Length: 157
Length: 226
View 1: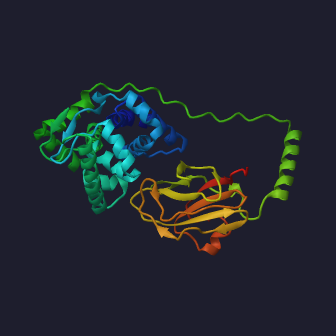
View 2 (view 1 turned 135 degrees about the horizontal axis):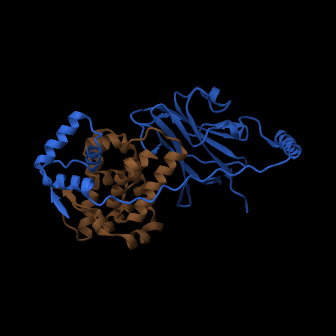
View 3 (view 1 turned 60 degrees about the horizontal axis):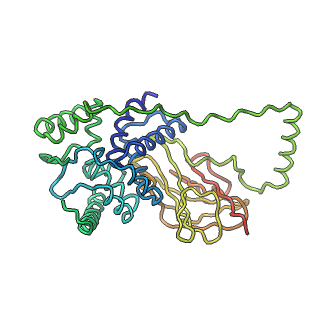
């Protein structure tokens, strides 16, 4: 399958960046392509597949049943380099799990887009089919939550 | 490893598409200009281009179709006749299960999909297959952006048709929740359908899922009573 060979490495890098483990990232990528095959989707592009990985990673992080496994497999080196802005901080698995408990699915997806994929507000709006204004408002709320939880966990920007 | 970007970092998605040569010309030159003055983003691109290429397991094959059981044609005819008789005896009036589309459907520009989420005593279940009195259901629609179709949620059950939610418009995206929740009761299987696009009148919908508008359906059966 040509699409698989073309896009799977990018998707795997993304999954690893968020989850910090290769096995779960690869399972997610395989799951997505199996669905693409079974639904006979012919015109999937990278932004579409990226969104699917975001969605599945968010669901996995919100599932309490998988927490122990994710922690056990976590390898910080798979997070890769993090480019920071003045108001952002590096989010590790501990903080990410707490955020997954606190945020809804959609807000968690926005957080992953912003903090792990470095998407601009415009790109997030396009990816998640939201207005730019909604993204800005939600991001402001998400940043507050990140700051509050980070402070409680002793993490500084 | 923390790297300081000189401005707004080029997103990983854009870097990946840049490396694949998929960006439009203008965007490509903007990215190239940024990379020339930003070591942080250049380092990320280097990882994509020269980092260890992840060795991927081959994609598992989708589950093979179940082989057909071979009957003698006489036996098959007898089974078919018995089936028809049973259907005539017990099948409720109204649309039959095979009249309903599945939970996914292709439309122009992508696909639409319905996900039901059940809340029962604080426990959440995605895509449940049974219902019981007291359960609350939320419907989520995936549809290709950009788009803001009008949608109607219809429940077909035991020959009757219900409209538990108000007709509403949805801003397309991934698993966008519809406003409102609903419950199911009764002892017949229910088909919960979402009619997307330009739903016909409720009077017309009472006849079954329309052919003219895209629709996605989920099927639930009543929980066995104790």
